[in-house]
Amino acid sequence: MTRQVNPWAALVALCIGFFMILLDTTIVSIAIPSMVRGLHTDLNSVVWVISIYLLVYAVLMLFTSRLGDRFGPKRVFLAGMVVFTAASLWCGLSGSAETLIAARALQGLGAALMTPQTLSFITHLFPPAKRGPAMGMWGAVAGLATITGPLLGGVLVDSFGWEWIFFVNVPVGVVGIVLAVLLVPDWQPKRLHSFDVPGILLSIAALSLLVFGIQNGQHFDWGTVFGGVTITEIIAAGAALLVAFVMWQKYNRNEPLVPLRVFNNRNFSTATVTATAIGFAMTGMFIPLVVYTQNVLGLSPTQAGLLTAPMSLLSGLIAPFIGRMSDKANAKYLVMIGFLALAAGLGLLVLEAGPDTDPWSLVPALLVAGIGTGFVFAPMSNIAMRSVEPMLAGTASGIFNTSRQVGGVLGSAAIGVLLQARISASMGDEAVEAAKALPQQYQADFVDSLSHAANSANELNDRVGAAIPADLPQSVAVRIQELAAQVVHDGLTDAAREAMLLPIGVLLIGAVAALMMRRNIAPEWSREPEPDTTPERV
Image (cartoon, rainbow, N blue to C red; front, side):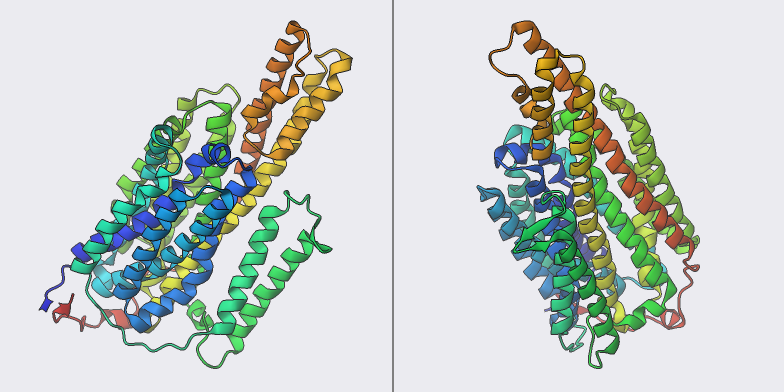
């Protein structure tokens, strides 16, 4: 059966899958404290729940973008939806951190199958001159997912438990599968690619070693991991394999996983840098923010989600307008404005955050950050894909999305390890200072107990009581309790503020990359009449 395809209806169906992917990036962050308690694990393990999803998502996307060119984007997209939905069910049923990490890896595979197909379909369904609104809708979905993730996650965690942040994907996934079958055209690019197996293996090994080394550095005290192998050696091996991957892509005479000629296009190459930067910042910023709002300010998951909702809502509202503007204005300046506004918003958060800050006084800073994210996604994607020749669209989409996810996995790993390191250092310093207010015979035990709690990176508010021996006089016990709470709150606040400085620095690098973009003038090939006007098979 053939019928005329409605590109907007098809885009809606595709965006349901894209929404689920981004939802599961943001919804998990709000549940970090609850998952630490519920799974009886530590902060490092829960950060791995976030990182493994992004890692598998990132390293497989270059490969899965080729699958769409070979077997058809619709078929690969549907396969990804099925895998993602089934993996979500497994995540919710997991009873240990190890099982949940494995299920999240499978979820990452589903996300990697889906994502490249969405941008490929946008370039296929919409001519370049009309692509801005479609990219705007794509950006609005990204904003909506960031609203829904923390808010829905908070409600589900408070009402039913952390497992339901994964169970909620199952009905959404089923609806998405049905709509994709009915509304998305069975477009067949008919490009028979060879698969660069050495490139796939090198990229997986390089990124896996880098992320493992960075994220687990604090856990192993930057020393030996096993058999005399150190964290430094693991990171060095990852960097060496990454260099080997690039060299192999350069000298592979068949069909490399990343054809380096695509980077001869300045707009595309600089856009991949900005995508990496925004992925790093958006993933990394929520980890210290959630720890601060829930563990220091005492917000419930629902309240923490409500606090960040205005930021994401504003981002989602302005993204479609910025998408349309990117067709007419010089898109690079829109991207620059977005990066600088997001950096300014995070900077205001750092300045405003304190142990006794009124949570709602953070809203203006979060709104500035929301304006920034609303300005970034649509023009960045538009300027990246606009000048890519059609034969490279699938590959370019995979590279572009991979760069954003690589930024995300590096952001979660780097911010996670930095936050753990600063928690340990800040609480240790605060404990030494607070102990001076106690009789000398209690000082050493007080400092040791709180230092142990900080180094465990566990649910720190539950460890305050560990600083109080059972046989102390009541007056001394009360004083130790007060001082211990002060140490935890002050230490976590300092650690969160310091960890937030890293994404600010990365955003400034992204702004510089955006400055180097050229005006998004349509290339010669895109001015030809669109040849694809016949009905397509659905």
